[in-house]
Image (tube, rainbow, N blue to C red; front, side):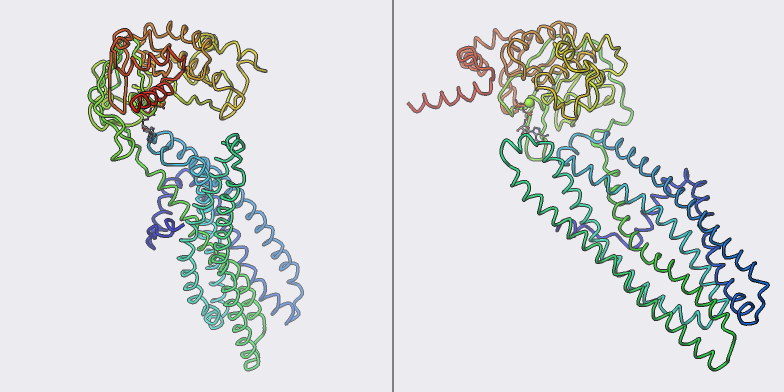
Length: 612
Ligand SMILES: Nc1ncnc2c1ncn2[C@@H]1O[C@H](COP(=O)(O)OP(=O)(O)OP(=O)(O)O)[C@@H](O)[C@H]1O
Ligand SMILES: [Mg+2]
């Protein structure tokens, strides 16, 4: 947690700045509701401060002078005070909860929308489980921050002022004695707050790591079991659990320090007041009513004073939560549209890559000056070994990342200069890692085009050879698939992703190993259907299997981030020592499905021959 502790400390004025930001972003809509809550809180404060005023006539007039006629009035007043307090407390609590829940909803929406805008680069270095846990904890923290502020300012502070006012009016000298505890209390609370600030951030981070680790372990449960990683993971997790536990204890120890200190100081104040009042009574013999009234006010004031001291500490914690939320919301998405970006206007759909260079991390280039042309309405295949940069090309075409050098042009328009939305609308993409969202099979296909009819969805599924297995599922197209499509096989998932891309009916089709998980026979059938669809579209297809590639109009062979060769199957296969020719030979000889394996086997074979 060293990193958490070394984070720069917020300036003292920052609690105000963050509070102001939270309020300015949210307060306006809630103004009427806040007004209502404040009214309730004022009613509570007024009713409570009224109690000491009843004490004086009760003692002096009723018990001391024996004026029992006042009794019904006093009883009615006391009962009335508690009725008001009860109703107002209820109203205040419900209103504040309503505001708080709405606030949570708004931040959740805002954060989600923001997450959707952030580029893929953000997700490359963020663990999703950890992120979700952190967001959850922080949003709840901000909710508490607002209701606490309001309750403490409008409720406890007003009540305290009213009661201290009552005390001073009743007896200025006794008030001075009681208020002596103020300065040391403020000093101590300040010290505790500063310490808590550090502990709170560390705690949120540990908790998020813990929840994230749990989520990852359960998501990868099959691998966990296959590699009998249970004990290892359990040991790793128990460290995090212990750390979270000790952080929580630390927070409790630090923030609870307020309680004994305020208790002790209050004890001194009350003892001082009683001692001095008794001394005065023994000397002057004044009636006890005002002293009782004063002590009642003092005891009543103790509660809000203690709560105020605690709220400071709680606020300090929520401030950390609010800061962390804004750190996330303030991240600027990288691939933003240029000012005045135009809509992409796709005519024929010709794609040109002009000497593009790119790396995911600085100093680690993945693509070096890659240039080629994918002719409009034709199929261009990209082949090459694992890690050659094929998927990266397809990702760049959709502008998930910005290229470092060169340009990608679609019908002559640089994709960096058009809106991302208009670019992606023209593209149907089947990722190398098919992903299914929570929902029905039908929903998952419809994500391709929200206004697709059921008939279009079923037609797409038929073309992707998914219709048959979908119909065999318990509820057909309405069967729910889990977040990872747990109930579907890899090939079935791929076919659903293909159906999703078919439904999209976009002029540009990007297929990244779209059929790699299918057996030869299903692949051939899906390929047939795809051929039909690809006829009128500009298609870029990445494939390891040569069978998918041979019919392409143009083939680009990638090697270590560079274009090694390009041409048609016929021209490339006839080059004796070409890379493609070698892949081709190995695959047809050994019947291997993967260029990769073949390439490796081939390279190993070459090495052995060289040694001999
Ligand atoms: N999100 C990422 N962050 C950082 N590096 C990445 C990322 N994705 C890929 N790389 C790296 O970029 C290089 C090219 O990866 P890419 O996925 O484009 O290869 P590929 O040709 O599609 O390989 P395969 O045939 O195995 O799918 C690899 O060295 C890989 O480690
Ligand atoms: Mg790939």
